[in-house]
Each structure stands twice: as structure tokens, then as C-alpha cells.
Length: 500
Image 1 (cartoon, one colour):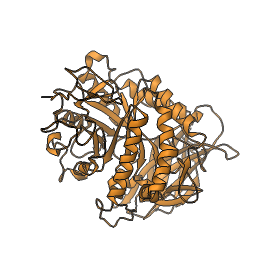
Image 2 (cartoon, rainbow, N blue to C red):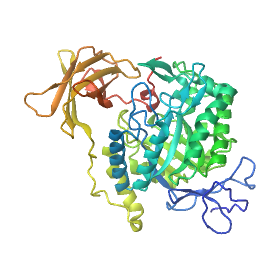
Image 3 (spheres, rainbow, N blue to C red):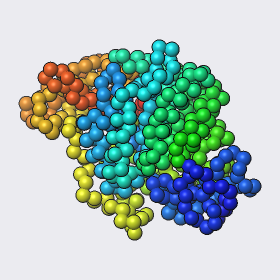
Image 4 (cartoon, rainbow, N blue to C red):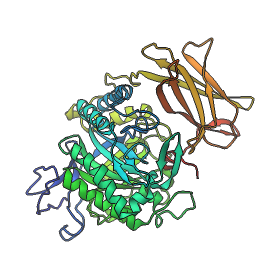
């Protein structure tokens, strides 16, 4: 049973009266379910407190994780952040769908690999945030408030330092010194993170900050594979996490965490003042670290949240299976990966109805909308595509898609073929209209090598070639012995835009 913590209830913690003097994590109005302990040495004697019985405190959420890949800030590729009119309409439609299906907490990435924000000088030192950053942040808060969705903001991915490449004036990664060098680390925190935290301090939307997603891939002691990634010492990463967590607690009432790339690595992030621990789980881990491992077996001193799991496409579990296993195993919450569908782990188009059914069965008294909520399964966007088709023709790849521009304005469509993990296109082709299928367009690529995983992206332009909309991922595929197949690609590889 739950053991009450009779110490001071910290300023930053939202409070709830559960017995006498118990401080509990609150996320989106739901009790995470285990007492919030404020430091590595202030937990009373004995084992960590148990999860509250039942699922009333379990938080089920979704990784958004981005709309454009650069949702916050601007750069050499133009502004596609949340305050951009087109992006705003798209995100608003997405959040309307998520809310209608019972999603109350969304995890959304902010800086990622550093490609758009923050701003760096020639020495790699952070100078601040660009003019569009806070407008994008405010737009995100406005949309979240409209749909009564709370946010967990993921600040960085390990790509901030594991990769390093430049494409069309945009630097992706290459910032290991920002973590390792104490002077550059302080500049990042003082000039980018703290201003952001202060801007958010009076908002009730952001309930937690995930400082880094899966940093373990870029830690020398935790990833010894010769995989082309830049690795930094664990001690440097821990110092960065500790410093950012301190800033989060000083400037806001939000919680702080880190998402490890596997459950057993969470212990590497203890003792840093984090409020809860988080980890990702995918099928490759099941033989080594089964998903059904009860939280008590992890021996941690904070609540634990499953930060990523495949919302569909798992060989072992359906989405409801995962949520039931996590709730029953004493975990504080779980976030499905993901609303985005580029890596084969489940688009929300497929997973959303199952989530809504699970949520409706769990909280019928709360009025959670049913899976048949009056919101279209495919949100209405200003620019959209559907019915993507791939087929081989004498060794070439034919890509087809029905492209729709709601305004009816004229446009030119270009398709781009990339090797997965590369930011340079192998081929670019103008899509042409089908004479027999109105609204359907196609392109032909000849540079396709069997066994190589590719992605196809789409750019829409005005007749004068002003950019209208970029779709980063129409399809991911490889050509195998039996024809075209969709490869399953681990998210950290799909997110790596610099080939080793």
C-alpha cells in the first residue's frame, strides 16, 4: 500500500489531499500515483512507495512528437513552426482528434537535434532564441488549452550531439561541446532554457520537461557499438541533466525527467533531482528486458513512466495490452509512439480508435468520448495527401499519391527519394497528374537499390516556386526478393539524418 511522505510538500509540486500530508505527482489533473520525493537522500527509510492500487492515477499519453520536424523557431529552410498559419491549422486539427479520442497528455519535442533552435555562434556557443521561437511556443500553448490537453515538453534528443551534418544551410547535431564544456553548457541553460522556462512559468499547460530523449545512444559508457554516433562521457551528460533539472525546479512548477533508451539504464540517471524516471521500450528489448517487468523490480526511488512504446506494429503487444501491463505493473504512465507514422511503429490513424476504446472503458464516468467521437479520422488540413502507392516498373519505382489543396490554388508537386538516414536526396522528380484518376499524381525514380531502406518525401510549391508545404515522409520502403516491403526501423535510426 502507499506509504505517506510526511515531509515538506515542495513549491513546484501541484498538491492533492490524499491522507495526511502526501504530495503526489499530478499530470493533467490525474494523480501519477506515487509520492513525489524531492531529492536523492530525503526519502524515508524502507523501499520506494508502491503505486496506488487501480488505474485511477495512471496517465496514458501520446508522443506527438513533432509536426514539421522544426516546430519551434525558424531557420534556413523557412519558418514551419506552430505559429505558421498552415502548421497551426494542422496541429489544431490533430489536437482536436487526440482530445476527442480521450488523449489528455501529449509529449512534444522542442529543440530536438538543435537544427532550428536555439541559436549558436561560430564557436558553437548558444546566443539565444530566434524571433519566431516564443510565437511558436505560445501557439502550441493556445492549441493545447483550446483542447484541454497538457504537455510534456521534450527539450533535446541525443541527435544534438550524436550526429553532425549540414544540409542547405541547416546544421543538424554537432553540439557535443554544449554538453561537455561547462562554459558552453551554462550558455545553453542561461540563454535558451531559462528564458523558455520563464516564458512558460505562468502557464498551466506544461506539466513536465523531459530533458533528453534517449541520451544513452550517445553515451560512451552505455553504447559501445561502432555505429558512427558521436559519444560523450556519462559524467558530462549527468551534469547537464542535473543543471537543467535545477533550472526547471527553480523557474517553474513543472516536473523534470530523462527518457532512457531501456529500463535498466534508468538507474544511470538517479541522484540528479529528477521527479520521475522514464524509458522507451520496443520489441528488440523483449528477450532481455520484458515489458511486463513490475516497477518494483527496478529498484528506483521515483515513479516510473514508459516514455515510448509502439502503438502498433509490435509482435508482442497491442496498444491496450501495453497500457494494461503498465498500469497493473505499478508504472505511473505510458506514452505511445507515435502520432507520426514514418518509422513503422504505428500511425495514430491506426492506433487512435484502440486508445479511445481503452480510455472509454477505463473512465466511463468521466464522460470520455467514445471511439465514434464526431471528429473525422483524417483531420482536415490545408494541404494533404492520401492513397500513397508504390510499385516497381522495370527496376524503377513508381510513387503515386492523391494530393489535395483545400484552397484550390495552383501548385507544383515534387517527390524526393532519400536513403534512410541521409539528408541529401538521391533523386528529385516533378510529379505529374494522372490522366485517368483526378487528383492523383505520380513520379518515377530509377536509382533504387534492392535491400536499401528509403523514404519518399513530398514538396508542394506555388507556380513561382514559393514553398507551400513539405511532407517529410510519404512512405518508408525497401525492395526485397518479393518486391516492395516496409522495413521496421528503430526510431533512433529513423531520426538520424546524418549517415555514418
